[in-house]
Image (cartoon, rainbow, N blue to C red; front, side, top):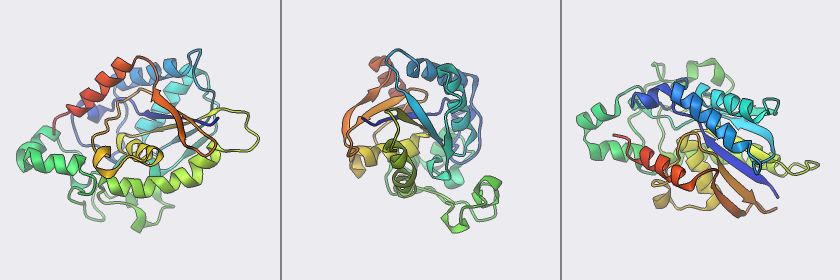
Length: 251
């Protein structure tokens, strides 16, 4: 039976400072490092999944979360696949701005629309400016017209689902593998996009799905990749409280 584990990176330094992050390459905060190690403790328990392959985004906070998590599990040797398609949503001109100050400037309703609606992206950055990813060497093999200058959640779904189909599904269904699980360490919005696709969540409901940092979410899947069982590892009340904390973030 295929298993899939989704893990949102631990708290980043800009999460702690309440700044819009998006594709800006920000490292983990000390709390985020602790969250990554705690995720490893959950994954390495007696009933933990048999992790066989790792997928991450190209952003440091996801990569380091995976490293710290797998150090605890004792599986730093896992084969790794990385893709820009698992990156966080590009927040356009909001990147680097304080969430509370942005809400004060543009109004809470407008900022909530930018952050939480399915199809309304924030204002875009201009090509060639600081937050245009086309000048970053990690994206040099990606066609420049595929790299976003802003995104809504619908855009993230559109770039994430092909990676699911082309890279993650083949690992889930790999011939000759005697069981095992695929671990995906990514971001709130790219994981939201994956969960939308896997669970068939509709456009209106997905915007209310909160994904806490550092708590693994495990699927048991049928051979047709239908969901047999799902849920956060560890204490359900702790996962619910962490999701609520994400919901209460200002801006």
